[in-house]
Structures are given as structure tokens and as C-alpha cells.
Length: 153
Image (tube, rainbow, N blue to C red; front, side, top):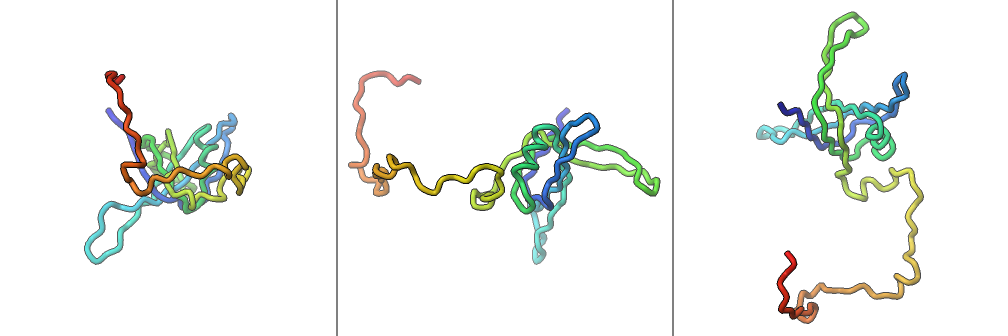
């Protein structure tokens, strides 16, 4: 049997870190995922998929992701039953995240990290060396390596 779910979409809200009574980190969040098709003349629809992450994955999501950011989630589908406040039996379907990844551009994620800012200037040694430029693609840009040895692979 196989139970694998892979989605990519945008976070609907900022994820919030919680802890169970036994102090295990857990984070629930919702991802808006566009459907791969749209009827002619209509806008593409989106599905809103619930995801739960545990332990270090939960801490990672809460630390580095914010509302609107693109996220890729790899996990498994899980169903659970519960009783709502009115006493009705309900079933929840969610993805239990095994792995999450960034998938937006660097520009999108700027400022969302809790770390020291990157230096704006390169070190003096790097400033003095010109960067190699091979933009022309001319044969003078490359050196032929002559060898009679067999390739190592």
C-alpha cells in the first residue's frame, strides 16, 4: 500500500507553534493549492488543504514561513474522527508533513528569517579580484585539455 501526498501552494495564514501536554511541538497550517485545470471562461479554482507538522518539522515551519509564502509539503494523508461542540461526529482529513521545502523566490522570503542580516559589502580580498566573464562563448574562453589517459568513469 502507498500513502504519499505532495503539494505546493501558498500559506493561508502565519503558522503558530503549539506544544502537547508532553511538550512535543506541533504546528497546523493550511495551504492554498491551485487546481491544474480551469473550465473555459472561468478562473482557476484553489483547494485549501490542512497540514500538520510535528517536532522539528513544526519548529522549522513556524520559524521560517509566513502567510502568503510558497511551500512544498511531502507527507501522508491521515483521517481522524472527532466530536464537535454541538456533539456531531466529524472527520478531518489532513496531510501529516514529513518534509517541507521552500519553493518561492529569494525575493519573496527576504526578511522572514530570524537570523543576522547578511553583510552588504564583500570582503576586501573579493573586491580586488575581477570576476571571470565568459559571456561571449568564444573558443578563446576555453582551454583544450590534451590527455591520452582513459576517463575515470
